[in-house]
Length: 180
Length: 180
DNA sequence: TTGAAAACTGGCCGATCGGTCAGGCAAGAT
DNA sequence: ATCTTGCCTGACCGATCGGCCAGTTTTCAA
Image (cartoon, rainbow over all chains, first blue to last red; front, side, top):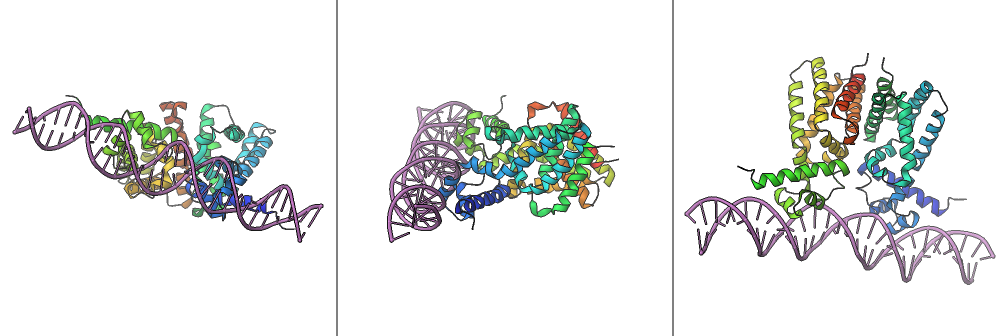
């Protein structure tokens, strides 16, 4: 029992699209680039995905699901525990999805205009509130600052190992959000 | 004595280009967009500037000059004073050039490929070292983290006043780089 | 073995991109 | 009045973009 051709091709397209988006950014990658990298034709990409944004949605899907899970779990905790939980879990997800996150970074203005990503944007906002651990506007800004710093640190994947990434995220988030 | 037409047009093109780059990003803004906003034709833009990257260079020029000045001044200080000086001055420049910085954020991968921006990239690296205040790779990463966070905070110019920006940068940079 | 459904593709479309070029037009010098 | 110089433009170019469609190849159940 081998994987159906449908799933195999779809998966390869998503895999290559992620790799290319990560290296050059969504806008700078054409459907032809994705098709060539995936070993099929541009028409095949459009056969499996209803347009370029649909490819992006597929690339972002796993991270979006895990982020939703994070937010749902944090919502059931008290404020301090929610902050602590979010710091640790966000660090872990950042490492796991460092490539995907690099894509999101560049796309924040674009994504906010696409209704199919409304859930992702809303969850990102909720996570910011959990990270801030307070309603103070300054702390909310600092939390947003932290997210941006972390997104930037995910770039250039070859530059840092996963362990170094984890350590950096942990140190930076704690310094910013849990100052002594 | 009115400004010569040459300078007036050039200045307006740069002004509108900055505004558009800031809102939509370099790649998503066409020469036609800039020309329309500046009230001239696309050919006029290309008459004054030798291609689209030259427009970008003109937009980035003032910030590039001030960054070079910052680095030169910090280079003459002891390590601790250099870090302190860089924190304060970088905060100030971030507020002054928040629009320009927003443009740079998206362009880091692109700019590094353009030789005309080598100086800007090199100065940015030097500033990272001053911010880190140490040769420890972790602190260098934290400094880079801080810069990314700050660049992200410059986005959405209408969302924060200059004073709020200044305060946020100061708090965040100190928490990250001068932890107690 | 066969036939229908699924997977896939080459070729084409209109739009838009950055960039070029020949020439129009206003202004100051002669 | 004429000429030169600098500023500006419409028209056009080749390339490339996302997307579409008619038709071919592959797959697989009956």
